[in-house]
Image 1 (cartoon, helix red, strand yellow):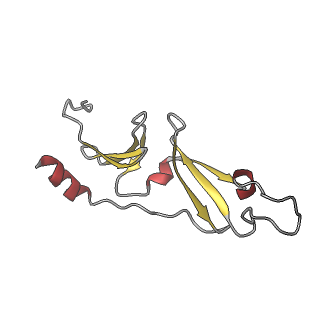
Image 2 (cartoon, one colour):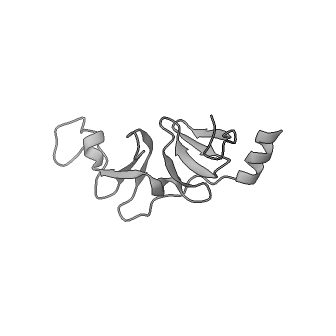
Length: 118
């Protein structure tokens, strides 16, 4: 695989559907290679975002208005992050309503590049 400068592309897988292109220093989907943004920023900013009611994902186990084992949407929301190129779900997280999107992965791109070149 080569990039636009005809240099070999150096890619490192970071998560199941997420990788970093060390040559371009960009996050990308490992299913379609869609760029998700600079590797020194939060890759989630380059994703399509879908917020879901937790009761859609975790239906109540019992039919009772007062009690349920499903998460209360007043206390938690489920946020899904999708690749804008192919629609693969890259990540999801459970957050309190109003809580900002987490920045859960930071890379030392310089160190990864050094290791890749060894």
